[in-house]
Length: 243
Image (cartoon, rainbow, N blue to C red; front, top):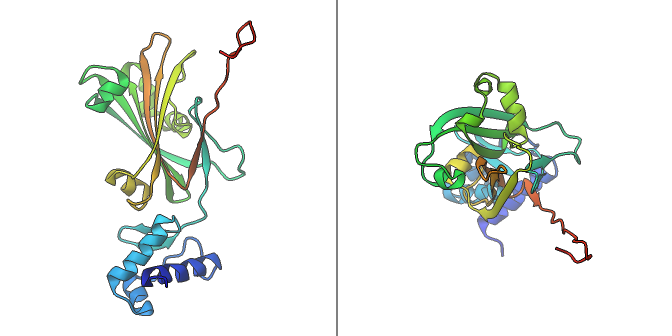
């Protein structure tokens, strides 16, 4: 027999699926829902947490619980470091960008292979589907590689950040590390997701032909909004043997 919280979650899920509660609509307050289902507030919140983990409902601090619009899934193309949206007719995701001048600390010194306190430019990029956050990227570039004009030209920065890439040197070497983990508190807050919803985390490090690291990107996608595709190319030597 299903628990009370799962029974409530099933009922709300059904109302959303059948259109009785529409995408973007605000649910009744937690107190109203608890009274409607004759349960305690903790039980009601536990039921809503089930739907939040499934990405059906999102809780916006100070406003309440809202039904999410159907989630858009995108593909991260490994090796190119781009987001493939060619298969969808939907409008491009809107990207907001903040730039900051920072100093290398902790893990950034290891990623970028620079001494502590080296000057960097940070691009904090948050993509949106409508009004809902979709994915998050933090991109770090040695400051001497970033044109000063970037700080005054939002369109230029936004166009670059929409591709989640700032620097594309010729003959670059790209190393990508992919993991699935729980979001940090800051990531969960920025993406407005449950701390129990796993995220696809990609760390991409790009180096030029001299082995200098020219970009380190930390990309975070809620697991229900992205796939990652990597293609391996086999080199054939003159003898016809795969290399």
